[in-house]
Length: 152
Image 1 (tube, rainbow, N blue to C red):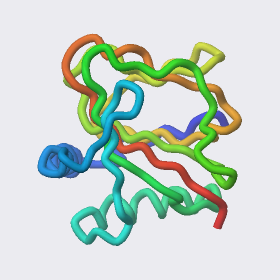
Image 2: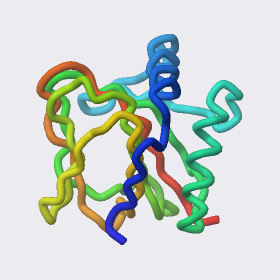
Image 3: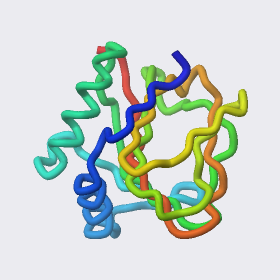
Image 4: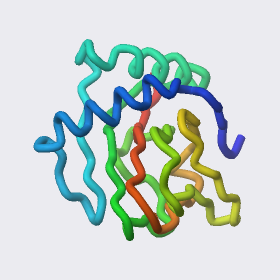
């Protein structure tokens, strides 16, 4: 399987909550390349709904969350084609789009498959095996949940 796409993985209300959560905690975010990740803690009760959905879906792949973050992608940010070399245990990656009021920012693969960002859409794929990237954000800010998983 190349990519599992789950539309409405998160509701608009859940996505708005996570963007607001990011904004309230932005001082804890850090600059990485040209994006601003905010590390998340699985034990934070405010995001239980997110942890439960990610863990439930990752079980389909016999995986569990290794680490995850909310990521702010400002205008002009992008990610060239790459493999996820996050840790020696990484076996799965996911992206959940929290908004769609931006231009650009599509997830793409080396084989030219391009995934349109749709609010609440979740993508699950093997980022260690499939080379992937993010097109340049042309207008407004892109927010996502990025997660990496390891085997159970």
